[in-house]
Each structure stands twice: as structure tokens, then as C-alpha cells.
Length: 134
Image 1 (tube, rainbow, N blue to C red):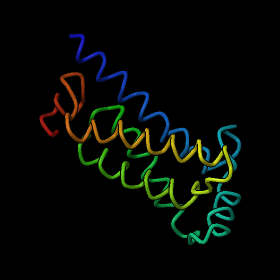
Image 2: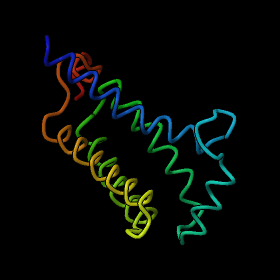
Image 3: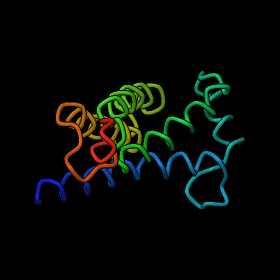
Image 4: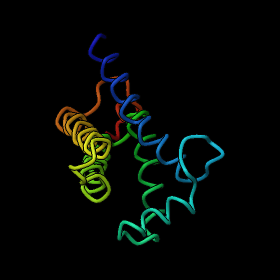
């Protein structure tokens, strides 16, 4: 029972990061980010094609919700871990800037948590376990 609760809380906390980030990229009306156009412009200013914004939003929202619900968590966590490392190095690799360094370290720490999900999967309190599709 305790393992199930800890697993669920951990998945919720990890998943929320991505859900909130995805919502912030859709529109600034959520108060969580800068909106679609501003995010696309920022991506392009960093040399990342703006056309990748929509797949990014889909991965963040879909992956975050899948983690929270406990659906295919090993695959989802692996995809989010790869995305998080790539995003960290593309957008936050400025070791002369303490803020960017903190963001990079945050991304690496999140990746560590996601890799633990890849290793252990979800416990019994997950939709995937209930449906037999984990």
C-alpha cells in the first residue's frame, strides 16, 4: 500500500511538470508560460525549428498525463527522459549563467527520476495495471 502511494505521488509530481510546461506553450492565458508564438520564436532564436513546437506540446501534455494516469509509463518515461536531456542541453547549456545552469541541473535531476520510472514501472495504483496494458 505504501509503495503504491509513493509511486502515485511521484508520478503525479513528475507528470505535472510536463503538463504545466505543455499548457504554457499553448497560451499565456494559463499564466504558466509565454504562449505559442513566443515559445516558437524562442525556439527559433536558439536554432531549433519552430515546427517542432507542436510535437513538443503533444509529448509534454500526453506524456505528462500518461505518467500521472500510469499508462505505458516505462515507454513514456523513456521518451520524456530523452526529450528532457536534449532540451536541457539545447536551451540551458550556458554554464556562465547561474539561472541556466540551475535549469540544466533541474532537467538532469528530472531525467534521473524518469529513469527510475523506466526501471521500476508503475505500481498497482495505475490505469495501465488496471487495464492490463502496462
